[in-house]
Amino acid sequence: MLLVAGALVTSNDAADSVPDWPLAYGKIIPPLVGGIRYEFAHRVLAALVAILTTVLAIWLARIESRRFVRRLGWTALGLVVAQALLGAGRVLFRHPPVIATTHATVAQLFFLTTVALAVYTSAWSVREQPSLEDSGSPRVRFLTALTTVAILIQLVLGAGFRHGAFGILPHIIGAVLLLGIVVWTAGAVKARFGSVPELRRGVVLLHATFGAQVLLGIAAYWAVARAINEAQPSAPYVILTVAHVFVGALVLASSAFLTLACFRRIRPVASVAVPARAGASRPARSGA
Picture (cartoon, rainbow, N blue to C red):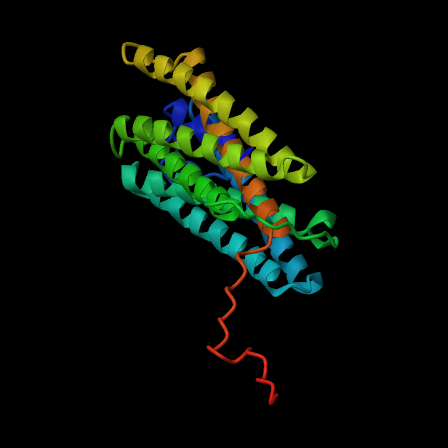
């Protein structure tokens, strides 16, 4: 919901509708008119997420026995604080493209962290499960991690275009490259571990969300090109661009789930045994 609220602010050109922070026009609740509605709703949802993340981090610190999960909870809280400071900077320094793009990037990193926490705190994560052997090359663990990183980079390129940091060409080139990476990774997982339920489910999610994102990307490009001659953002422009941002986050979540599932079920590459010294294993010569 917070990602959608942020996308609504950008798509409705409402980023500069509230000139002060943390208050809005010197009030806790400003007049909810025009673009102020979108900006204020974004701030309210951000405050709610910050409160929930604080509770989550403290709760994990008290009951979670795994150190890396506790650290992940504090990482999520740190990202929320950083996001709040970036949001304040974007308001106080108006709408610099670099700050706005960084703000959008940290939002995706925070979302990625919450997806990881949802996986690691699930019953499936702590259940005893047999490890799988990956004999293919490149390894599926590497491919899925590469795909998640590539999707994150593509989202950053999209944010840079939306906030005016650079043009659309890097985003289009990234989409073409990402298409090849997703097909490669999903095909490898399906061919080697298609019978494993959680890995098969991860491939289905990645296929579904990425396919929808490609179609939304084409529609959003049409809406952006059409909006150049419009005085105000039209409903198709807002709906398609916000949906493109939202489904992009779902693609990242799907890839992250598939990556974490692969790291949970598939053994890492075994270390190569050191060969025995020459003659060390020779049988003793008979005295006959």
